[in-house]
Image (cartoon, rainbow over all chains, first blue to last red; front, side):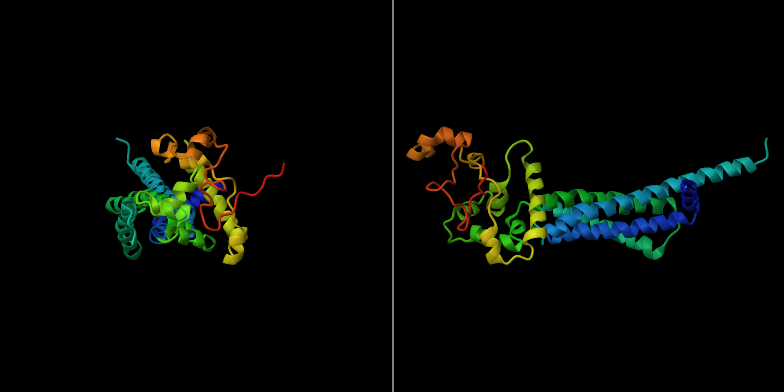
Length: 88
Length: 209
């Protein structure tokens, strides 16, 4: 299952998708945080500090995963390129 | 509009982050190094600024009387402490320029090293009680039922009224009860002294022996 998940994420088209997900999640988190700033009553403040923080953390984690997968992809491509080069 | 500078820092962080994110979602550029750096600002740096300063502004907002009075069952208490004609102890303290806008928090917060944390935790209990017990209760019924959970400690009063000022000691009752007041054996808000602090205050529930 872990391998399947890793293979799913390793596809090159997943990286922009992950970044889009991270962008949308960040916009949601920012909206929740700003709601508590403009309406400082119990419910918005609690939602901003719990759901807002969680969504923001997920967004940052998605961005981190996208960066990690991109670095992994670049490394793999370089290795494949080196292997394809004829020996000196 | 918010008055707290931290709230404005939170707004500024969001104002810088949002255009970057919308640009990325609308234009969908290739993930070049520049795009990744921009996204780091839009997803990481600016939102972290918003989260940090927004949290701080949120914590500060929880101290305000407006925040405490935003639950309907607390409106009579908040209204009385804001009433310029009221002579209740809460209103007299609410008129203090130094902390009047935060008079609920100033008088009801626990003192000591972990006072803020303990107060925030008891605030969560207030939210729980409100959500599950008082949310749909009429104001008249809530006014009958709501009471302070435990006796108001004199240590809270002593934070400002130090019990050592000559003017304070001139009052015979103060001079006679100074040790009991300092140890908390006698409450400043006892009947015949300075209580009740709100016009409709009720004492803490009696503890079964």
